[in-house]
Length: 463
Image 1 (tube, rainbow, N blue to C red):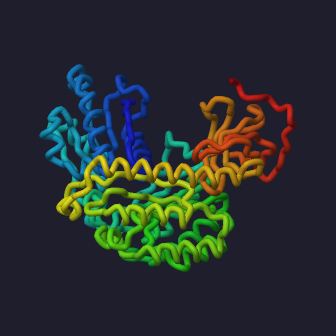
Image 2: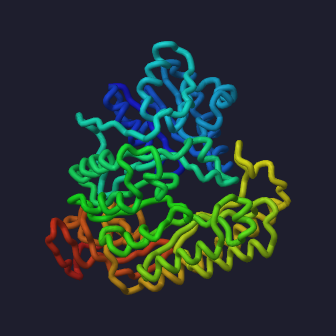
Image 3: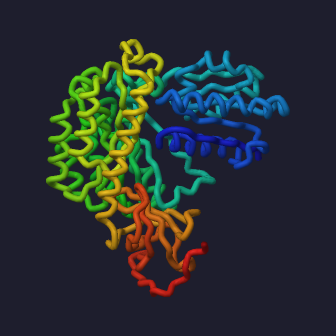
């Protein structure tokens, strides 16, 4: 079989898209390799959400040019959001590329690669799918993919919000949902292959089901349906938008045992004026009211968010409002960025009066605040037992395994290396906190409903 090397940047949607391309290419005669020098096909699945990510990808693609020069038969392609954004321009900047494929072309990856081979000419595939909904046809034959304990499931693609800073609607198109029955079939398949945790994905995941479905199903109902599938032992979803996070979603957190106590809900800014300029569609007060309603039902829920500092015309007092909001909500973690203009977005034409030095200083203050908030919350878990789904071995010094607790904290822990395996449920005593991660020791394991308690003298981690 031919070999394909796949490299992925960006969000979980890109990770899922890469897995889908791997599966499609496998059925076309390709096996994945971890050595780029051995590949017949190299695909870089890209992100364009931040300018820094774009620069990094261009640098990586350029570094692969010698491989193409040494092996003219090698097909070198760029996929994902940056490919969609740049299109023909990317080919002009890097004429050694053979394939430019946007996110809507994932299902056509085999056809696109075949076209390159058959014509010996570059292919640019960046048109959007015209179908009203989103389908991922099932491939029921042999597969090289093993989902592991935790598996991603795309349920919706695109976004209709058109925030002024965001390039997603221009790179992934308008919102399109998959039929609920198709999603359920995929979840059953993943569970049959060993998945315990299902993570539902979308750029705006809780907008699922708003339009285009033959059998309309709102997002909260989909949560109940997926949670009821035998073998689903944990359920997560990301990423949500405050405008689509309904009372029914809050009730789902209250009612569904396997829906974990964590929510990633981007707010972006603590200033109402900035939120209006961002075209977020909600106020700070509305966001806080939503959080308060959720915590009233699920007091121990963990919250994470996205923060942009230095948005055009952001004043010192408006930045202080963002810090105040972070203190008020007590996020367990945040993805924090300096604003950078993105192509095709309205904000790129806004007067940008905030100097880079000020943006950088604000980002540092935001990061320091989040470090403090994370540390304060992490210390609440010290000497407590947490339930961890074992993901696998870890390279962290003084630990054997890694996994996550229901609040989405990473847990590195020592344990009996002969008794524990990926997919087990393990109770861990938290002994130390490092950033958004715990370190501890396993005291018991549950597998197939059977509990085993570990002795205190179980084999220790190799230092």
